[in-house]
Amino acid sequence: MPVATIIGASRGIGLGLAESYAADGWTVHATTREPKHPGDLGAVAGDLTIHGLDVRDPNGIAALAEAIGDGAIDHLVHSAGVLRGVDREEMMAVNADAPFNVVGALFDAVARSAAKKIAILTSQMGARRGGGTPSDLYGESKCILNDRFREIEPKWRAAGVTSVVFHPGWVATDMGGRGAPVSVRESVSGIRRIIAEMTSEESGKFLTWKGTEHPW
Image (cartoon, rainbow, N blue to C red):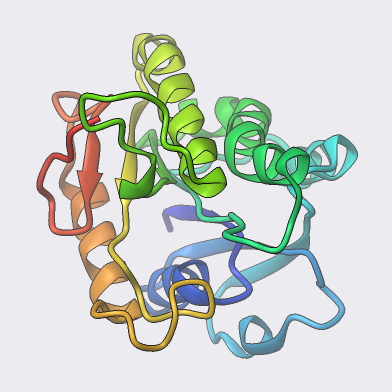
């Protein structure tokens, strides 16, 4: 069966993705900072393995790569992120640095899979929209993520891997707020459909959960 790895799967979109892939019969590796208390992730049925991971911890990232070993990852989705309640250093470490540290550690597993696809969740708040860097700390961190993605994506593409960044919508999660207009199910459904259908022609793009291209 194909393999999906979801980084940041304890709640929200990441949890929804883990549930969706597992329900469709995929082998799923899902990460959470609290593996001994996984909450709803622990109730997901199917071929799912929970891994403890704080994305700021290089040793934890290395341990995840070791656990995957010589296995392959068809779809790697980095969903972990933080919106508020932390200082600038932590915001940048989680939102701007960690996605590339994680992908770097797992890249070989993606490259040896059949599908060879990577998706990193970003936000429309990180878009420059023709201007400078967003002033909001969260937006700044996502803007830096986007810029780094655009720099490194050609190297990933040259290795045969298709990758995109996603604005998943303003989703009704703990992070987005329960009054947000997009449900987790809608966002997950859109993200999964696009990842499944995307080809090398889409690689390097900033997409929305609806499949439209978002301006940088």
